Length: 411
Image (tube, rainbow, N blue to C red; front, side):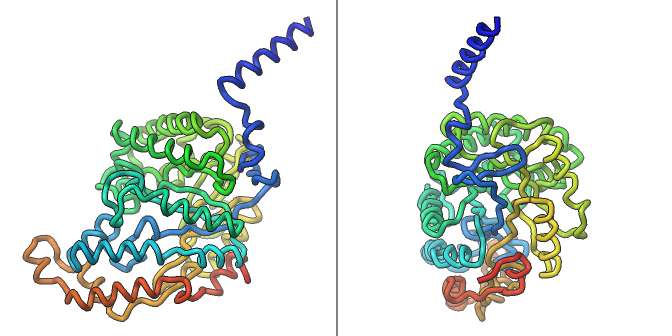
């Protein structure tokens, strides 16, 4: 009887392996999870410490100092009004080349980062015109992956803007409501893009994994959060299955709902090799701030990761970073680089004439008449945009040294 059971168990294992390849056979050369730990491609437990390459592939209005013009398509529209299509195309082309370069990656490695989270817009993988390009996603992701491979940094790919919009707010280029959760076409497109990305990077050990959806469901919709959580849960299940059909090795990162603060969406662990991600800003630094996520990790024996935090004083950043380290929580502070702002690792000078652009962004643009009346001088705008493209390059930037030290980084 004992021999029969052993044979049956072996047959069962062979059958299951044929359908669901054993992670142990595939993950040893890639990031993977073991209980609460994240294991690097060398087989060692790793605590991720890094920063987000925000405002590069997903422009944000507050980092451009454009106030209510705060989503990528609104920034594009504003610039189009001021300089026209040809100059706009030239601006985005140089912006994508200048804002993040190999020098930035080399510097981040030198100060102690071990990984980068790279936000991207789904439109980069479509025929839609986005930042003056069509289907340009792999051009820029491949470039940063190659730089990181050379410098020894790991990369987490973050779909910051999903089809249909997952928040209903500006950060994902939404239209005021998270239509992703009620749109089959949007969900199909999202799956198609992630499968394409997973197929492309399935043999790339520099890639940590796939951060499926940034901060799904804004707090405006918390009155209906059970409805959204149920649909988010089902969408996560589908995306995991679709990605695993082409890549059974890389880790998958899942954000909680309500700006990635609410883990109620996870009724149970969602499979093997999953990391559960939360984001948290503007609170008193104390154990209670992270305890619910620590409890979740302990209960289910799964890794947790804070994909965004920061935007605060050096003292706050240092205190929270220490708290995260004490709780063995991998972290990624937001963002790496901002214009004329010390709440980030890197800073660069605001162009002399930038106020003309920011003032126009605040002006009445509700009709063509108002647009014509309020447009600033085109030559002065082009001069300011040119200075921006020069100033944002690494060699013109300057480090917020005290902020970097607060993160425990140093040269």
